[in-house]
Image (cartoon, rainbow, N blue to C red; front, side, top):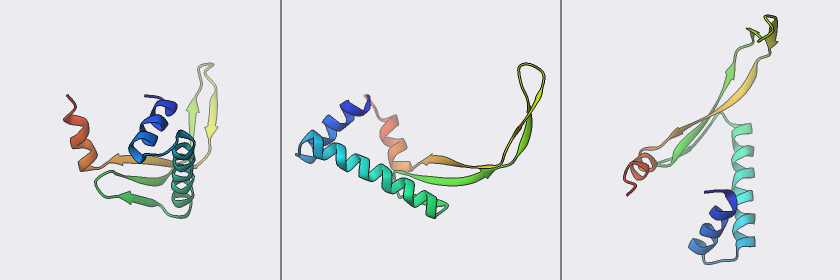
Length: 92
């Protein structure tokens, strides 16, 4: 399912227009982005948890046998919650 199909399904489930559903979805994603920028953990019980961590700086070997430096950076990880995992495994 792509974003357009998801927006149609969301609009149907919210009993609203696709434009309104798309705006809602964009707002939710932007708000999640703001929240994980401010905090290290954002948890939705049953759905999942967004966590940020820092990947260490390291040197890696490139295909041309040279060494490249990869700087330290923050990365976002998502852990699936129990309810969502159960729904995914009960698919018909």
